[in-house]
Length: 143
Image (tube, rainbow, N blue to C red; front, top):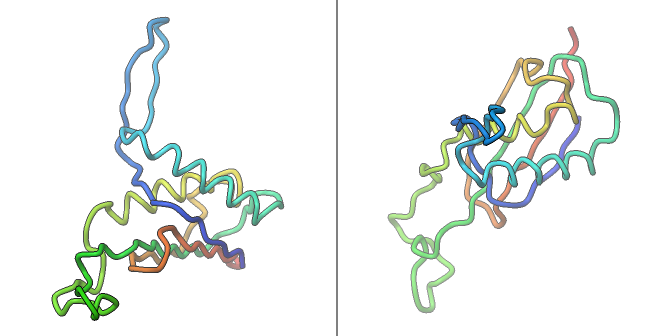
């Protein structure tokens, strides 16, 4: 099993912007300008934790995305460390989980696995935590 944590604010992938440069060549890039830096951070941390050849077997991938609770979820004064009664249990706000998984998975391609089509089992979730980022677990499955 390969397991590592990528710190930072996860960014969604999926939507693309296409166009033509002045020299006539075409381009396709993520519509969100913050997606590419997020994918670069994921790639760097993945390379630090896995130095072998890209895996070729079927894989199980688990991603747990953590967000820091906003201050508005907490009480004030001497109870400032306690959550408000109406504070949500889960971060059911943007970014979209599916698109965030997509950008993170794409960043691992060619580093940990050859192609994301090898992912045959997946479990993903968003949670509140002490640090923003994603915990990634990758397990090889037998054929």
